[in-house]
Image 1: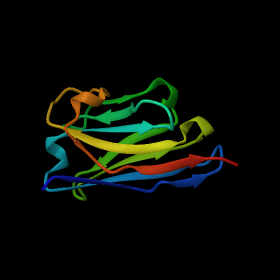
Image 2: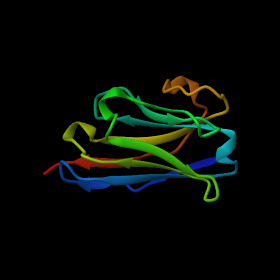
Image 3: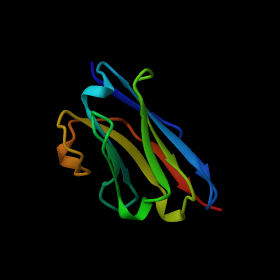
Length: 124
């Protein structure tokens, strides 16, 4: 059974950092494009970043460029998202998702499998 499990969320002060993990089971990360999404209260889910199955292409939402990075460890079958200089507007539930397609995209409808999400709260 294909499963994605996020972890690493929590409460952090503005300017702080967090690393989110997305552990995959039931499939090999190298066969799927992985995306990170977030959903703030009262807002639609939005794409934040993604990495292709080959690992040689990434995309980022403009508002997180230079602050967030996506990476993966094939041996651990895990994708990571390092988040630096966090801002209150980054507060949301963060999800990872997987799609079989090769093309990097942050369109939610393009993703077939989703994790349960992890809460990130940026507040002083």
